Length: 317
Ligand SMILES: Nc1nc2c(ncn2[C@@H]2O[C@H](COP(=O)(O)OP(=O)(O)O)[C@@H](O)[C@H]2O)c(=O)[nH]1
Ligand SMILES: [Mg+2]
Image (cartoon, rainbow, N blue to C red; front, side, top):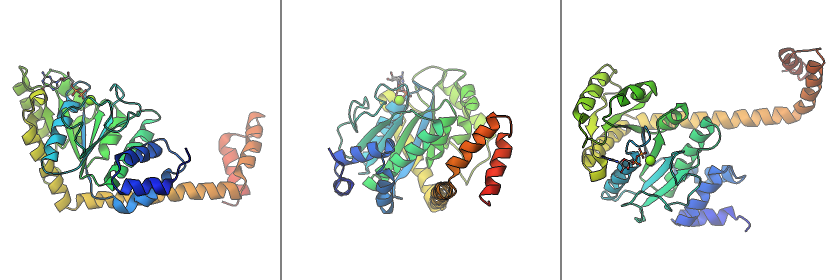
């Protein structure tokens, strides 16, 4: 089926979920139409606030996200959920809203769930996740919740794109230590001890709270530590309240606007860099010059550094 991007985007703008799903796939897979799509949708972005939810596997993130999204729906907000979880059974390009275990919000047509395939480099995944968020934003969602497994650097990059980051831990001893090692302590704006139906939950909460006291207060916000039992929906109301409180602070302090400005700058620099390299590459027939230098290096007549300098000299750079 030939792709008519303009028709697809028209349906997207009319609120068609199938079109949304299709557009996300094109962007996620770096389809040649992806730059045009993102360019066309850009004027409609900038409204959605992004909440990252991260923590170790099995901590109860998905269960919590489900509840928080349902709570957001009671405020008539449209919610996008992006699950970036290599261990989740539904990763690998499940259709929007399809085969997702999240229960109560699943059939609600104000919730749009998407799981990302976590292939490719971690940096690439962070960027893709951000672009998918932009698409959801342009679709008109008010909140985007991004669930990531907080175990490595790539996940931290993704969390970095969120406006507000919720770190979910469980009471088991050692979890807090792991969190510190994984750098979760730095990125959390709100901490949650989930599975607080277990013993030692109180101890874990107090330990985390005192560890956080050492953290400097950032922009007038001291990260709270909350207790939840996601399975029963306990503590969700408070968690939702804190998320909204933090987002409100970010909006009123101008921090979100500032972040957006920095994002715009980074994007322009990235596009320029690619274009400049591409045009210089073609103009100077760099490919051929490089081929010749490779031969020279292999024959022992040069080194990669000398060759690069030689190419710059020849092209007058
Ligand atoms: N006992 C207990 N189990 C929970 C709680 N929240 C989630 N679970 C269970 O923990 C498991 C992992 O939950 P899930 O939401 O998939 O965790 P994720 O990997 O962090 O997304 C599931 O079997 C949940 O039913 C809770 O508050 N208490
Ligand atoms: Mg999950």
